[in-house]
Image (cartoon, rainbow, N blue to C red):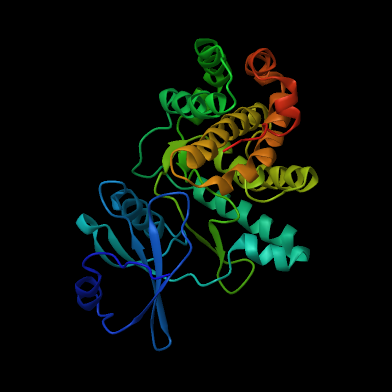
Length: 328
């Protein structure tokens, strides 16, 4: 099947000095963005097609330039035409962390230790030029579960009680994210590239960066919706972060559980939305893993109000089945 190329691509590549190159479409992600690998002789680059009005490359460009200027390994910007949604990027190659570990599981511990240390380096920087991860945003995100998952399961739930429970649970962590750190918000094994050596890793998919809590990206990495991380490895890497960062353990584990449950509730809603709204049912297969992670988080005493809401509103048989089945 032929793939349509972005409008204006020939002029863009010619102005960037990449005319006459081969263009190879790559698999898409959960957004409206598309990616192409650009080849000319031995040289390669990545083309991001993020066309308005569904996409806007400006947040990606701002975050990439800030990360690069501060010594973090984001892909360098080679050329840009933001109004058309075209960005030419450094090519990080083929070794995604997730794919590499599928083939080389013996290296899992070393690769995760490096990924944790990248977060420690990021958290030592002053916060970037991003908005605050506010309570409004936290609550908007958790409501993706009641907006999309619950209707898909024909569940009538207590929406106001859900929001009130989350507000009670999340409020204690807000003072501990001030001053905050740059939160990439999607830091996991499919968005980390291995750059030739296990201790050299590149960052992807950071356009939604905010200023928030130190535990958020750690839980994104260790409670991965797309890859199983054993509880033993999660605990070891959690401790590694504390050791390397000097973060006091008091309150941090409770906040990690709070943000784990918040993020996992959001992801369940997003994955159902990707099926219902965007016609991408493959994400439904990941929901049992996410639901199991959320159940673990809900067992922490800090999550008691939210756990009580789930007990009262989501039937046990759905939760035990990893979120239930989804009939098309």
